[in-house]
Length: 188
Figure 1 (tube, rainbow, N blue to C red):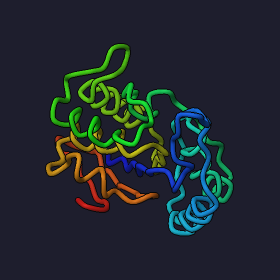
Figure 2 (figure 1 turned 45 degrees about the horizontal axis):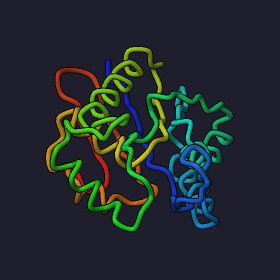
Figure 3 (figure 1 turned 30 degrees about the vertical axis):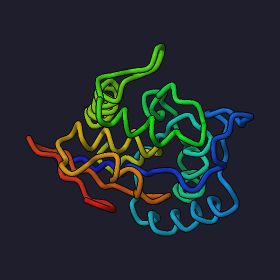
Figure 4 (figure 1 turned 180 degrees about the vertical axis):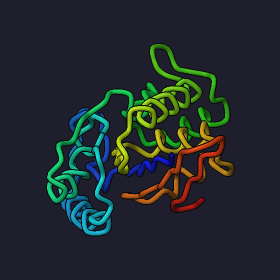
């Protein structure tokens, strides 16, 4: 039996700043709300069995228009959250991200390594496949989560450069059902 998971990177959100809002509360911008509405149009025919999301507001808001169309609730799962990098929103955050991508097993004190994120992402997705209904599963998440999930599922060519150009929103279709996971989406 094949299971389809659609990983959705959130639409454009308010950028992180040292003064907030905090990571969990960053909402979509007006452009992001328009993107979420258009995304609902493009996903309308999928007819999913379940809609899951990171608990971060921007991920939930991205899926809300589609979930309303499908008349489905959005279930949040902490495992679908973005990478807990320990990197503060500073002008040179990109340099810190790039260093982390070069050394994925290294973590800042009290934070999560990219390797740990990869393990969390793969475990969350495989658990959802095991529990999934016969219909597609829609998952709202984040760029680093999706990139590391794709790496953990065996996709090649996923690196810091891939993540930097990943659009907002972006949709990646994963097909499970056998020893190989097939992935389709921007940049793959």
